[in-house]
Amino acid sequence: MKKYVILIFILISTNCFSQKMYIKEVKVSQDLIYPLVIMDDAKLKEKANKLNNLILKTYLGINVTLNSIKDALLKEQSDAKTEPYSYLEFLSYNVIFNNNELFTFDINSFWYVKGTENETKQYNINVSTGELILMQQAFTENLHNLIDKKVKIEFQKRITQSITKLKNKGNWNEMYKEDLQNYKIETMLLDFRITENGVNFIYDNQLFSHGDMDCRPNELYFFSWQEIKSVIKKDSPINSVIN
Image 1 (cartoon, one colour):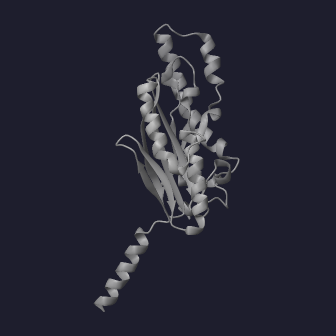
Image 2 (image 1 turned 180 degrees about the vertical axis):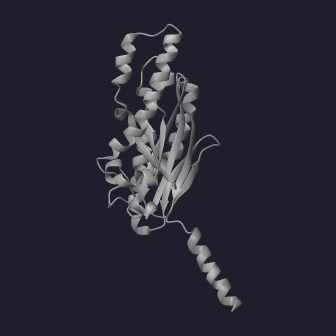
């Protein structure tokens, strides 16, 4: 009896920890670590390479290949000596979610371009196809109505607080009011990030150019699966998380 129990435990343990998709690090230095997406399914190797090439072009340019990542990163770092106002200072990644059906990670980079610029890009991947999940594939047309309502309520609170602050300081201009109230926050929606408990929607608040930065919207707004499930398409790959 004991032998059967041990065998069952081994089988369960192996299954729990096997991953269809994972990250292989290309480590150039402590400050430069690039993530390569690896898929266990040999049939999807070509799609994994295509995906990695697509992500590479995002960061290191169209001439970089999977075989030249290290050289490209070293060049970007060495540019600090020859081009002190434009070089890659830091590169890392973070795996957000992986349930063997969906795989989400981000790449964080710091580019020194006359001052440090932080950039984070999100990647939500359908593991069964090896393809990126696009917002229009995952959500219905009602997505914006649902998330804009929550975001705009919070945004309007900031605007009211900002107006009060500016008036108290004597810096208020009536032109600000029209600019603030007519601002279309939906134009600032950049991307989304799948997590275990829901979805983060990412906004580019740098597009908000009003002088009082305190009333900028957040860069990140979280919606639980309960809040967002009504606008997830029936054939959306992210249904595997909530079913």
